[in-house]
Structure formats: structure tokens, C-alpha cells
Image 1 (cartoon, rainbow, N blue to C red):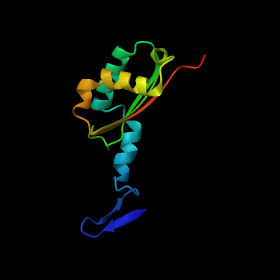
Image 2 (image 1 turned 60 degrees about the vertical axis):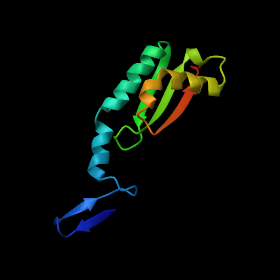
Image 3 (image 1 turned 30 degrees about the vertical axis):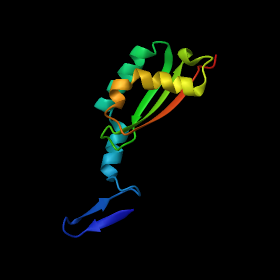
Image 4 (image 1 turned 135 degrees about the horizontal axis):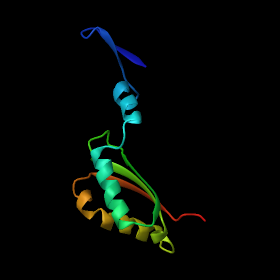
Length: 110
């Protein structure tokens, strides 16, 4: 959907959630943000047997909220709440600067 800005003389393309289209396209092709890299690094250090770690800044790039998906043998035979507590403990310093966190944990299937 395109919105017209007569003052600028060019159409401003926007998605339904009001982020500029160019920002969204740019975000699809760039590597991880600085915050995503930091959180990923901390998780790799704390979960050395992880087979998959994916960290996504879901706050639009400002680092206020992240979605974390992590697959690790360390979660084996632990309840979901215990798995999430392990992730929260690993990120205790980083969480202080966040507004929210979505955590998805799993054990690798062999």
C-alpha cells in the first residue's frame, strides 16, 4: 500500500504496521544487529552444545525486545519452565536493558 506525501513529492511506501518498506527490505538482507550478535554470543558461551541458536530483534531494531530460539542437549529431561529459566539466567545482564523476551527452547531430535 502506498501513501502519497505531496510535500515530499514522492510516495512513502509503508507496511501495515507503519515501518517504512525500505527499512523492512534492508532489514531482510543485513546481518544481525549489534544486540542480536551480543545475545547470540552470550548464548553460545552458556550453551556450548547448542545445535541451533536464532536471535531476532522484534522491536524494530532498537533492542528492546528479542525472540530467541535455541536447540540444545542441555535442555534434555528438563521441563519448559526450567529451560526458560536457564536462558534467563544466561542473559541476566542483557535482560536488564530489555522490555521483553520471547523464548522458544527445544532438544535436538536424533
